[in-house]
Image (cartoon, rainbow, N blue to C red):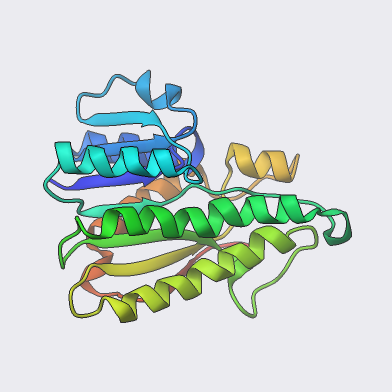
Length: 226
Protein backbone atom coordinates (compact mmCIF):
# COMPACT_ATOMS: atom_id res chain seq x y z
CA UNK A 1 0.00 0.00 0.00
CA UNK A 2 1.23 3.49 -0.87
CA UNK A 3 1.37 6.75 1.06
CA UNK A 4 -0.32 9.27 -1.23
CA UNK A 5 -0.56 13.07 -1.04
CA UNK A 6 -3.20 14.78 -3.17
CA UNK A 7 -3.76 18.53 -3.41
CA UNK A 8 -7.02 20.20 -4.41
CA UNK A 9 -9.29 17.59 -2.84
CA UNK A 10 -12.40 19.55 -1.88
CA UNK A 11 -14.23 18.75 -5.13
CA UNK A 12 -13.94 17.41 -8.65
CA UNK A 13 -11.09 15.12 -9.66
CA UNK A 14 -9.18 15.54 -6.39
CA UNK A 15 -12.18 14.54 -4.26
CA UNK A 16 -12.78 11.45 -6.40
CA UNK A 17 -9.08 10.51 -6.22
CA UNK A 18 -9.24 10.47 -2.42
CA UNK A 19 -12.12 8.02 -2.46
CA UNK A 20 -10.54 5.77 -5.08
CA UNK A 21 -7.15 5.52 -3.34
CA UNK A 22 -8.80 5.01 0.04
CA UNK A 23 -11.01 2.23 -1.30
CA UNK A 24 -7.87 0.31 -2.30
CA UNK A 25 -6.41 0.66 1.19
CA UNK A 26 -3.77 3.30 0.52
CA UNK A 27 -2.91 5.92 3.13
CA UNK A 28 -4.03 9.31 1.84
CA UNK A 29 -3.24 12.88 2.90
CA UNK A 30 -5.85 15.12 1.30
CA UNK A 31 -4.93 18.81 1.11
CA UNK A 32 -7.29 21.65 0.27
CA UNK A 33 -8.25 25.05 1.65
CA UNK A 34 -11.67 23.54 2.35
CA UNK A 35 -11.09 20.22 4.11
CA UNK A 36 -14.71 19.66 5.14
CA UNK A 37 -15.85 17.51 2.16
CA UNK A 38 -13.08 14.95 2.74
CA UNK A 39 -13.35 15.10 6.54
CA UNK A 40 -17.06 14.32 6.30
CA UNK A 41 -16.27 11.10 4.44
CA UNK A 42 -14.87 9.76 7.75
CA UNK A 43 -12.45 7.37 6.04
CA UNK A 44 -10.05 5.67 8.45
CA UNK A 45 -7.05 5.75 6.11
CA UNK A 46 -7.49 9.38 5.03
CA UNK A 47 -6.11 12.45 6.80
CA UNK A 48 -7.23 15.92 5.78
CA UNK A 49 -6.50 19.41 7.01
CA UNK A 50 -6.98 22.90 5.65
CA UNK A 51 -4.04 23.76 3.42
CA UNK A 52 -3.12 26.79 1.32
CA UNK A 53 -0.24 26.17 -1.09
CA UNK A 54 0.72 29.84 -0.92
CA UNK A 55 1.24 29.92 2.85
CA UNK A 56 4.66 29.10 4.30
CA UNK A 57 3.05 28.09 7.60
CA UNK A 58 0.90 25.49 5.83
CA UNK A 59 3.93 24.10 3.99
CA UNK A 60 5.63 23.77 7.39
CA UNK A 61 2.54 21.95 8.66
CA UNK A 62 2.80 19.54 5.73
CA UNK A 63 6.48 18.84 6.43
CA UNK A 64 5.73 18.23 10.11
CA UNK A 65 2.94 15.77 9.31
CA UNK A 66 5.15 13.76 6.97
CA UNK A 67 7.99 13.60 9.50
CA UNK A 68 5.73 12.63 12.39
CA UNK A 69 3.31 10.26 10.68
CA UNK A 70 4.94 8.72 7.60
CA UNK A 71 8.37 7.29 6.89
CA UNK A 72 8.06 8.19 3.22
CA UNK A 73 5.75 9.58 0.54
CA UNK A 74 5.28 7.23 -2.39
CA UNK A 75 3.03 9.37 -4.59
CA UNK A 76 2.42 13.10 -4.85
CA UNK A 77 -0.41 14.29 -7.09
CA UNK A 78 -0.26 18.04 -7.74
CA UNK A 79 -3.93 18.48 -8.59
CA UNK A 80 -4.86 21.86 -7.08
CA UNK A 81 -5.58 24.48 -9.69
CA UNK A 82 -6.94 27.95 -10.26
CA UNK A 83 -8.85 28.75 -13.45
CA UNK A 84 -9.52 32.28 -14.66
CA UNK A 85 -11.58 32.94 -17.80
CA UNK A 86 -11.17 36.64 -18.54
CA UNK A 87 -10.03 38.75 -21.52
CA UNK A 88 -6.32 39.46 -21.34
CA UNK A 89 -6.67 43.26 -21.38
CA UNK A 90 -9.11 43.07 -18.48
CA UNK A 91 -6.91 40.78 -16.38
CA UNK A 92 -5.06 42.62 -13.63
CA UNK A 93 -1.49 41.76 -12.67
CA UNK A 94 -2.83 40.62 -9.30
CA UNK A 95 -5.24 38.17 -10.96
CA UNK A 96 -2.52 36.88 -13.26
CA UNK A 97 -0.17 36.40 -10.31
CA UNK A 98 -2.83 34.62 -8.25
CA UNK A 99 -3.27 31.96 -10.96
CA UNK A 100 0.49 31.41 -11.09
CA UNK A 101 0.71 31.37 -7.30
CA UNK A 102 -1.47 28.25 -7.25
CA UNK A 103 -0.73 26.56 -10.56
CA UNK A 104 3.05 27.07 -10.69
CA UNK A 105 4.56 28.39 -7.45
CA UNK A 106 2.26 26.22 -5.32
CA UNK A 107 3.15 23.11 -7.29
CA UNK A 108 6.86 23.90 -6.90
CA UNK A 109 6.57 24.60 -3.17
CA UNK A 110 4.65 21.42 -2.35
CA UNK A 111 7.02 19.34 -4.45
CA UNK A 112 10.02 20.87 -2.65
CA UNK A 113 8.44 20.11 0.71
CA UNK A 114 7.84 16.45 -0.14
CA UNK A 115 10.84 15.42 -2.28
CA UNK A 116 13.24 14.56 0.54
CA UNK A 117 10.76 11.96 1.82
CA UNK A 118 10.24 10.24 -1.54
CA UNK A 119 12.06 7.02 -2.52
CA UNK A 120 13.73 6.38 -5.85
CA UNK A 121 10.64 4.55 -7.10
CA UNK A 122 8.29 7.33 -5.96
CA UNK A 123 6.12 9.22 -8.42
CA UNK A 124 5.21 12.89 -8.72
CA UNK A 125 2.23 13.43 -11.01
CA UNK A 126 1.29 16.99 -11.91
CA UNK A 127 -2.05 17.79 -13.50
CA UNK A 128 -1.79 20.16 -16.45
CA UNK A 129 -4.17 21.00 -19.29
CA UNK A 130 -4.32 20.57 -23.05
CA UNK A 131 -4.37 24.37 -23.12
CA UNK A 132 -0.77 24.32 -21.93
CA UNK A 133 0.45 22.02 -24.72
CA UNK A 134 2.34 23.64 -27.59
CA UNK A 135 0.39 23.39 -30.82
CA UNK A 136 -2.91 22.47 -29.17
CA UNK A 137 -6.07 24.49 -29.76
CA UNK A 138 -6.17 27.64 -27.63
CA UNK A 139 -9.18 29.49 -26.24
CA UNK A 140 -9.50 33.22 -25.57
CA UNK A 141 -9.72 34.31 -21.96
CA UNK A 142 -7.31 31.70 -20.66
CA UNK A 143 -3.98 33.57 -20.94
CA UNK A 144 -3.12 33.17 -17.26
CA UNK A 145 -4.47 29.64 -16.85
CA UNK A 146 -3.13 27.98 -20.00
CA UNK A 147 0.29 29.62 -19.79
CA UNK A 148 0.63 28.47 -16.18
CA UNK A 149 -0.25 24.94 -17.24
CA UNK A 150 2.46 25.14 -19.88
CA UNK A 151 4.95 26.14 -17.20
CA UNK A 152 4.42 23.00 -15.11
CA UNK A 153 5.01 20.83 -18.16
CA UNK A 154 8.49 22.32 -18.51
CA UNK A 155 9.05 22.10 -14.75
CA UNK A 156 8.29 18.38 -14.89
CA UNK A 157 10.89 17.84 -17.62
CA UNK A 158 13.48 19.77 -15.61
CA UNK A 159 12.79 17.88 -12.38
CA UNK A 160 13.03 14.51 -14.13
CA UNK A 161 16.45 15.47 -15.45
CA UNK A 162 17.69 16.87 -12.14
CA UNK A 163 16.61 13.83 -10.13
CA UNK A 164 17.14 11.10 -12.74
CA UNK A 165 19.77 9.33 -10.62
CA UNK A 166 18.15 9.56 -7.20
CA UNK A 167 14.48 9.57 -8.18
CA UNK A 168 11.58 9.95 -7.85
CA UNK A 169 9.99 9.96 -11.30
CA UNK A 170 8.09 13.00 -12.54
CA UNK A 171 5.32 13.02 -15.11
CA UNK A 172 2.60 15.45 -16.13
CA UNK A 173 -0.88 14.73 -17.48
CA UNK A 174 -2.41 17.32 -19.83
CA UNK A 175 -6.14 16.84 -19.40
CA UNK A 176 -8.86 17.72 -21.84
CA UNK A 177 -12.24 18.96 -20.66
CA UNK A 178 -13.60 17.17 -17.59
CA UNK A 179 -17.05 17.84 -16.13
CA UNK A 180 -16.14 19.47 -12.82
CA UNK A 181 -17.40 22.38 -10.76
CA UNK A 182 -14.39 24.44 -11.83
CA UNK A 183 -15.18 23.89 -15.52
CA UNK A 184 -18.82 24.87 -14.95
CA UNK A 185 -17.76 28.07 -13.19
CA UNK A 186 -15.39 29.06 -15.99
CA UNK A 187 -17.60 27.92 -18.90
CA UNK A 188 -21.25 27.89 -17.77
CA UNK A 189 -23.35 25.47 -19.77
CA UNK A 190 -20.45 23.60 -21.40
CA UNK A 191 -20.79 19.82 -21.07
CA UNK A 192 -17.56 17.85 -21.10
CA UNK A 193 -17.48 14.27 -22.41
CA UNK A 194 -15.54 12.92 -19.41
CA UNK A 195 -16.69 12.79 -15.79
CA UNK A 196 -14.51 13.56 -12.77
CA UNK A 197 -14.77 9.91 -11.68
CA UNK A 198 -13.60 8.64 -15.06
CA UNK A 199 -10.59 10.93 -15.10
CA UNK A 200 -9.75 10.25 -11.45
CA UNK A 201 -9.74 6.52 -12.14
CA UNK A 202 -7.23 6.99 -14.96
CA UNK A 203 -5.01 9.28 -12.87
CA UNK A 204 -5.02 6.83 -9.95
CA UNK A 205 -3.83 3.97 -12.13
CA UNK A 206 -1.20 6.15 -13.79
CA UNK A 207 0.08 7.43 -10.44
CA UNK A 208 0.52 3.87 -9.18
CA UNK A 209 2.12 2.38 -12.30
CA UNK A 210 3.06 5.09 -14.83
CA UNK A 211 6.55 5.61 -13.43
CA UNK A 212 7.45 2.08 -14.52
CA UNK A 213 7.49 3.26 -18.14
CA UNK A 214 7.60 7.08 -18.06
CA UNK A 215 9.78 9.78 -16.56
CA UNK A 216 9.85 13.44 -17.53
CA UNK A 217 6.98 12.93 -19.95
CA UNK A 218 3.82 14.86 -20.77
CA UNK A 219 0.88 12.64 -21.69
CA UNK A 220 -2.18 14.10 -23.39
CA UNK A 221 -5.34 12.70 -21.78
CA UNK A 222 -8.15 14.01 -23.91
CA UNK A 223 -10.82 12.78 -26.29
CA UNK A 224 -12.20 16.20 -27.14
CA UNK A 225 -11.43 19.80 -28.06
CA UNK A 226 -10.99 21.26 -25.52
